[in-house]
Length: 41
Length: 577
Image 1 (cartoon, rainbow over the protein chains, first blue to last red):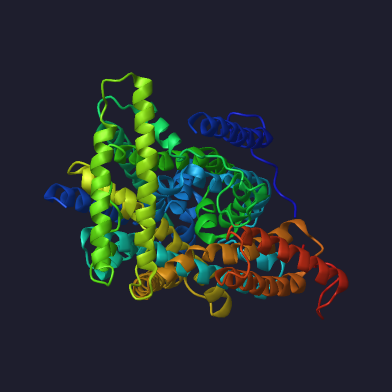
Image 2 (cartoon, helix red, strand yellow; image 1 turned 90 degrees about the vertical axis):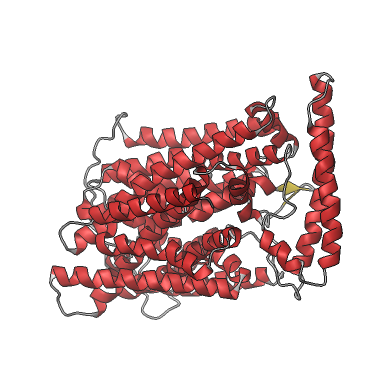
């Protein structure tokens, strides 16, 4: 199926940057939660 | 409830209904009724997506969950951001390009009519029953805590929203969800502020977190390993969240019409993608905050009288059984324990470090004995002669609200329960009606209809599903707790298979319609069989893994049938793509 070209996303130049942001943010949260758990246990 | 609470509750609910009706005055055709004329902005869709996923049980259960089991439930959502990325790369551009009304319409484009019908029927069965339960669960809690009649509570919970969903369709659903979101989060923020405010003067937020941490409630990350072995039946750990949760969320957001219907209303692919990616950013922190509220309530109860069992009606039930005398003895010991705890937790003249140690030891001792007493109560409630509900997790937060929060805020938080239920149920009714009309009615009834007639028929389907869900809610109450527990895992029974069909459609271009159809039927029966074996203790596996089993099962079996052409009629290549 031929898909139309991607529309430009806001803030970044490509959607790939948005995907990296979402996955990176999740990784950051998991690291934060890990230390949060350690600190308060 | 006081008069002020009633006024706040009634005014809030009436305002939402009137606002929904006000937003309903539009042109009468299917495109507008189900898809808002494909004109939504990313913000409207984002709030719709959040409002559809977060039902009343989310706000009632989550704080209770962290109160009893700690915050590890947040890991359940770790797969969500990953699923959002996959959806934006694969599903969203195709759905928009084809200008679909429902997700299942894509399956006819890619495979054939019977695969579309089968998947739509799985969706209608699963969504219809689970919507009934999402009416029933908060109604049971409210009627139990406030003494309301269950039929009337079900009617209010599931019936009033039908007025604007019937009239205004997707537009009324989207705009009311926007207002509901603001009220819900204002209410939850005020509740959080009040919990911290109610703590003794010298106990701050940091102290409350330390109390939660010492009691093991801040276990946000867990590995699922005990005794050097991974526990497959452990529901919430980082792996079940990332892997099982990923399949569940991908299926829910990619193939459940109640969610797909929200982002199909977007004016462009860009708006859909943006709303899903922002959902991936905000969902985990949002869920973390709601769970943290439960830990703060736990910290509060270390300085105040904590109910032995949060569902008072169950204690009343026990007091009329053979356990009545034993219950009195347990209650007496518990009261004594509470007096001792409150005395010990009072700040003394000793240095802070010693004070913390004393309080920590007191908390550990009280918790241990309290857990033993609670287990005794639960054992009695499980007795077949009593036939009670041994789980009071869903009652913890609302019981705290009713017992300790000021007048007015109680009414607002009960309104929050109604609004969160309405947001989710309204989106479900709209999607059930859309799938019935587009995937079944329009394909089976060949006679062409005027746009206004199509609109009217769709309204009647909305009404039908609204009544169906209220009836299911009432039946769920009559049948009892076992049905509610069964329907909680209902999504995982069907989502995996539905996702498997869609993954084959997107990623396995050489697989044709016949293999995927028969694979879906066989794997669905297999998943149900595993669930039944699980229920009877023959296998022991968390329900989240059923999503992965269903999805991977359909893919693998389709590949085998296609490769060896086991089923007659399997074409060598798919001719529809």
